[in-house]
Length: 114
Image (cartoon, rainbow, N blue to C red; front, top):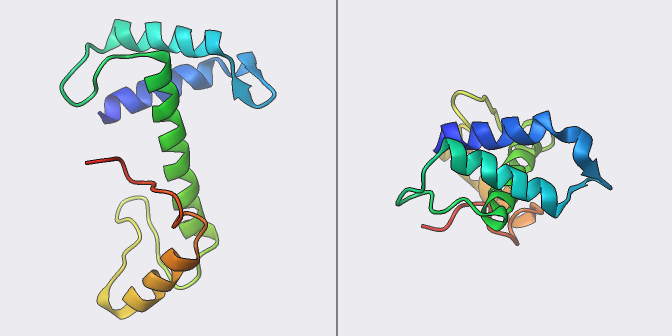
């Protein structure tokens, strides 16, 4: 799945010139669909490559990005590394609980459905 996500982001990055008003147009999502379907066949976990699926995957990755950025740059009391993650331990679990409660991310699920 990481390979697909990297391909999705790479394709979108290579077409940044086609962004209008900060958003990708439907035609760009359709081109993304063609690119992804050409390079990755549908699987049990990934499903069909549709414009809507590509857009939703991008939105989910964007939420993850902002959540991690928030932890790295804004949330005090946490150590964060790209290799180890947030490093939440028993010593800072109360701080984590407070962060989750107060964070702008607690209202919205940033985890993929199981």
